[in-house]
Image (cartoon, rainbow, N blue to C red; front, side, top):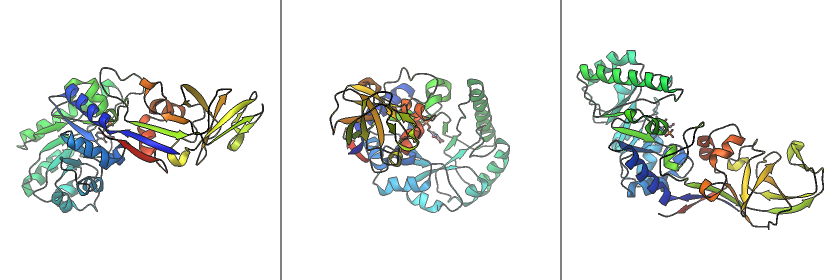
Length: 356
Ligand SMILES: Cc1ncc(COP(=O)(O)O)c(C=O)c1O
């Protein structure tokens, strides 16, 4: 009735495209949040077999789930809380992004750590003025550091470059204090594409790995990546209605003339944004508008007098190269971004994995 098709061959070819575009920097494949909704274990397995440099997640639990799922590639996580069992990170050979003195004081000595510094995003990580305390704790505990990371706010070029200046100055402070750092990483997808000078030793790519555009204001050009996920459902009801027919809760839409309505069993429980009236979906070779409020289980499409049959496939989003609507166009209809569309999609829709 409804499914999410995940093309694992595209995950691998996208990853190789990123390696060739951003090399010699290593490429971390970011698979947090269930691999941006694509299915973390299957995606990670495909990447592991393709020889991924390192997999990145936010939570320690996600990192451990990769190990329990049999993933052998290096895994890093960077969003820890005080309840996290850092000893288990060592036991599962997880690289830790460390953001607080408390974490530095409690991390086992044999852990592989990267220091996370807040260069201007205002979220996680050490403020630069805490670096002397960081250095002291490292020295007191005789801890080794493998990496230094930060994350950009993607606000403007000037602000990104200002964050880079802070990043470089923190690296220098550490170096002058005798703290050796082998792997510096700052750029996620957008900066890896826009600023070759920010690639350092590694880039952390999420959204482009899934073939989606990190930019809201410009096209994704020059990278040979393709969308990995398509969301599809089958027409579950078809009917002719008169002019003036109200559609779905609150009658946000009334038909202007006699027409046909197709019912698509993919609701906000599956992650279809409730306000996506006006989005277009593809049935057969044509695009049709979504009309009326999206309900929990379903939405309605006005197909006019087109010849559509029960059970015909409806592509909710997929690949623009096949003239399908995209995660970007669906996001636009809901005033959000493709990241949110793919990470929320799911519900009762099964993921079907197309093997490489
Ligand atoms: C620290 C960090 N690095 C990298 C990424 C990947 O970002 P993107 O999907 O824009 O490549 C994220 C995602 O939010 C992140 O939090």
